[in-house]
Image (cartoon, rainbow, N blue to C red; front, side, top):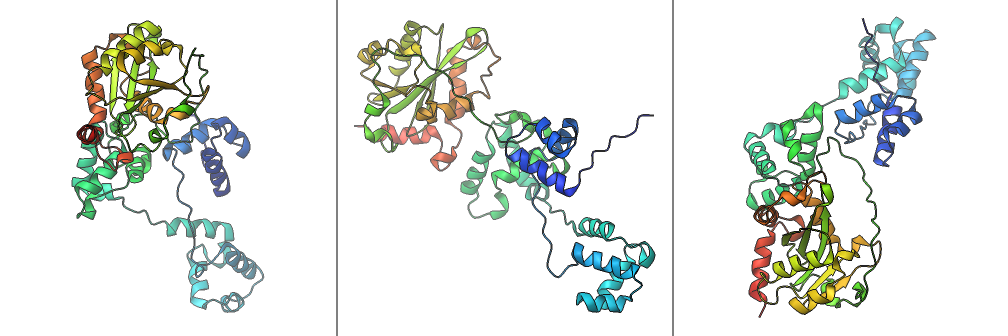
Length: 384
């Protein structure tokens, strides 16, 4: 019979494991540091969904490990319970109960008593989603509609402004999904999250090398009014890549975060610019004034785009995708629907429009939980 694997971790090793996990270290690195294999580390982290448990604290009025060591040494030396209590400045009844609940005068051990005390002190807190069925059902329904936990939390705060019992933080929603031991939301709802990850952890973004564009107008020459997002009509764009060399163009309005997608038959500049011209011409007059693009060669014919649409194109600095962060963030949201492993060429323009509609009708935290379509409608009303 195969022996059961010991997955226990000493408190100091568990603390070190979570510290290193928060720092972004790999499982193998963490395992080597605390002397355990990566499988054990993965098991512990997955049980908590990658979320470190809150640090436990002890009241000063409770016995400490040092107090228990003094009790143990006093018993070995043959001192009375009253004498030990006097030395520690504690009531004799406290010392008597401590000794009796941990094996008596002959079996008392400080380390074992300390561990038992922490175990008895545990007071599991019932999460709001576990005790509130109506709230749990609302949250589950919004997750099925592809809303992010931040969007759900913000929407609940607006929708149930005078009902605190129907509000919950996005962190509680994440923990209810990820922490296996306390899961209150169905596990299949994890598949509704954009990232698809089973655990939470620190992630770093890799920069991509960009091509050079002849005659490109630098983002540094872009009008200053674009930066504060107060004025509508300034857009950001890029391509997202799928399997088999397929691509889709994405356009995002900076003020409203309104999204448009364009089906592409290829990545060459002729095809991309033609598709963008067609999409831009469907917008209300003057709703697009500038377009900020990455350094991809698909916009080599940017001058033709400007002539056809009267929209000036500005290009980011090399290896600086953060300069069009709105579009980068939106592309991340789109990956929920348009995977890197998908052949994007099979999507019709109607299907892409439906995906864009889903994003445009979801509340956004950055908009105060307004929907992009609502903010865009207000923007159109302001344009003369």
